[in-house]
Length: 280
Image (cartoon, rainbow, N blue to C red; front, side):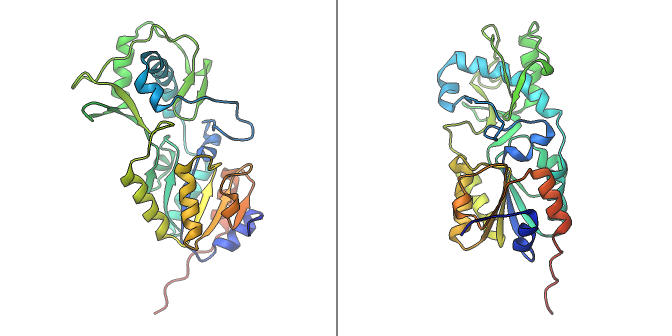
């Protein structure tokens, strides 16, 4: 039966265990990246995969917003929550991190085993030939194609997927793939698009490596993250959820902690004992 509790309760439940961590947008809010579904988040309508590939106006609108938003995300820095997970991994307590975020803040903090479930904001892929470009390279091409497009990061609202909220994008020019002339798309999983099967399988394997699963900063509103919680529970692993507000996984969690991730993870890392050495 699920019980609500504190970080102290989480320490008691996770003590002596190696655990996998599943993170969502809530872990990055203290780095200046807003989340989609937090208690104080404004309503958002993220673009779907079908809209992106099927409508040139939608695609142009997205790229104009992304052209601004990616600069904001590239300038963000890891916070105490990210750093706490690095420390837990170095101590052998965390088996790895599965993140629903595309901001790469876990890697910047120093986490070694990270599965970027929904992709990476710093890559762009051609949907025709499969060539992957760095986002910085595409940024330079977008700048060259739109010399009069001058919007400052501080003047617009930024969304979690390196998107910015802009009103007028009708004149924005999106260059095609320089290899084959195909359609370019940020190398992230859009709403309505499936996570690659090999990535999902790797994440399931990572969950299976741990004795428990810790969820940090995710409402688990979409199945791409919730399925790992359900699998962990079905396999008899302990499930702890740290999140501001309720989640779709609360019903199968052993413990829910309604708290911010930065403070909670830092306290957890400071309080968890090291694993006992194996007996001879």
